[in-house]
Length: 268
Image 1 (cartoon, helix red, strand yellow):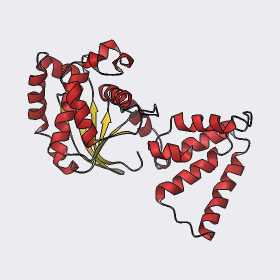
Image 2 (image 1 turned 45 degrees about the vertical axis):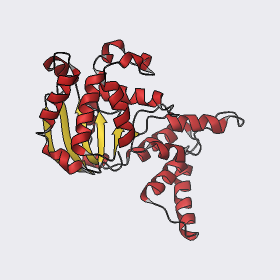
Image 3 (image 1 turned 60 degrees about the vertical axis):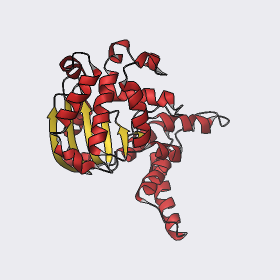
Image 4 (image 1 turned 90 degrees about the vertical axis):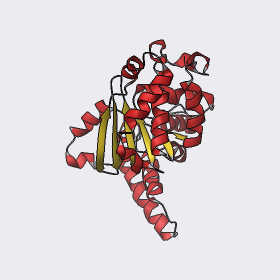
């Protein structure tokens, strides 16, 4: 996420990991026994009891009080499946999980429905593996209690997890500092455009043009312009009649990180 500022939670089968993040700074963290399978077992399949356990355990997570008004970053398969259901219920037009955002109000309404335990009645449930469905209410209960304790502004879903974090840790310090969106756009330009050198020339030229015309950009708008220039020629092999649509689909559905969904639309 560019930049990340909030509290990240990784819900697994056995535990919940919470940690405060602010750009590159890592703050306090805690591990709690609130993984979906573990909570289901401790609560003896009672969602009422699961809610009591989650509330009791999360009271130990003092870092949540510092998250008020900030973002909660949801990591883990159960929460991704909840987000997938939310997409279905809201007819969300872009099927990209990473950086999917849910407002606090919308999340509360949705989670209340799932936490009742009648997941088979939820729209879009056929898209979730039957083996994972029984854990959805427990994931919803934990997320409800996190929101009650933290009062976040919104939830942002991550498609990445511990594996990707480990791979990131293997990069050298200079590679870790690279902008992931620009790096991905550069890679796509190398694979699909006629000349990546021309794309870099376009980045430089548009930067000078914006300055000459007095066009101000935010930090993200500068990044998006840079990425758009790198991606400008990726559809050249396609027929002119559908070249634009093909490029739009590639950009909208590419496995980019470091860009939110409005940013994808801006690029496309």
